[in-house]
Length: 290
Image (cartoon, rainbow, N blue to C red; front, top):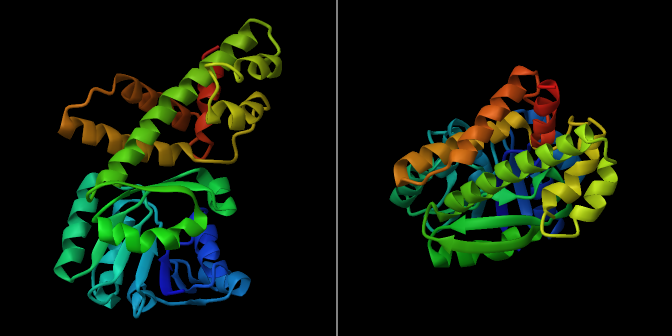
């Protein structure tokens, strides 16, 4: 068991750090809002620090799950950033979904200090984090991944190294691209069923067992039919992720016409006041159109 630091105690990071402490590691947490760090220690044990640098001091492995590029830079860089407190030979694991550009920058900054950097975004949502069954896609040197993999398996259903630095983030982009199309397709199917006067639950019971079945269909159709969207992965977060995907596509020449279209559909949902609704709220947009 190791001395670890975990930075960021949001809906994902809070339970992820808890799994590490439960696995027997000595975990020091940092959160921008100190009261949440105090609550985590009260619930799980371990300790908390007032800065990322203090949390990272003496840790063999520092893990982070924060909001966006700027948040990640803030917890990594500067005199109070994690890199300032980490020793050469230690490993930083980033579970945040961020751009390829910030991953490249921080990988280079870490290397200058002799720190390994593994990009390791996750999929599975809050429920996956709480139940310890996240899918984790990683980029970085093989030896760094090997050293980190046993630790992050505390909250993983599957954890795989896809390639060198940045490969994990690129794989997460593939995940979000696939989800965008799936949720729009599911929303259109349910909207069509409603317009046709069909029992949506009966429809899903049948088609979910065939080629149309997906995680989104199995886990979101009931709340969609119940008009309940105050849960799950927020539209604001999805638009941030799809923006990353579209920027990367501009760089590598990939064509993402459906992703670009669904991103605009999510913009419509934001205009409806649904920025914090679950991504399955694409159905609300169709209903608002009549």
